[in-house]
Image (cartoon, rainbow, N blue to C red; front, side):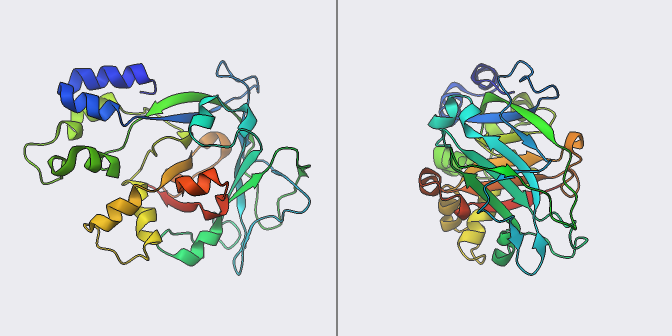
Length: 290
């Protein structure tokens, strides 16, 4: 389910009219990044970037390193100028490139891991923005890590829906959306959840709502942003969670030989004001697996 029409049709079929209207008002645009084997866009527009391989970096930008642990692995590069027009609506840069790096355990055989609950480990995940016009050259991967297989990416604008327990649902539906509410809320019913499923992956995406593997990732980064000791039922946690937007997610992908834990996913989230100011160094990272 990726189009506005498909999501609206599912809402009209499975939800009461008032609930459907409110839910549809919450939909957000996103950009799905799709494997493009021949480099011509595969019917989804021009190639917009790539997974794996070796990145192009300016001479004055060092390869990202987690101090005391080692170099990060290169995950993906996105050419913002090649993205669909909806990218500007989403607050993404209209030019330049976004590069994503992650300490995947290759360098130290999994001794250190990046967890959102450990603020110091956030140095093990990095977003690098290279402005348009800045000269760059392909950079060799540091010794001790192997690059992932390079896979070209095309893109497609999609409509995305909030996941099972997303804070915007609580804001929109109030106490009636509590997990303890009876009867079961229409948005939680299996028929509706199946009807709006994103389907099979890999689900690489920019913006929109995240596709959580375990639970809503906004709560995870909110907990970390608030110091990690907030009760999960504290309204302050939901308030903070609502301040974070998905910047990018990268799924496990056999095409690029990427596997995050047990078929997991990597997520970078950012606050709207930091996105607008291009402060990508303030993005927060989390990951989930089955």
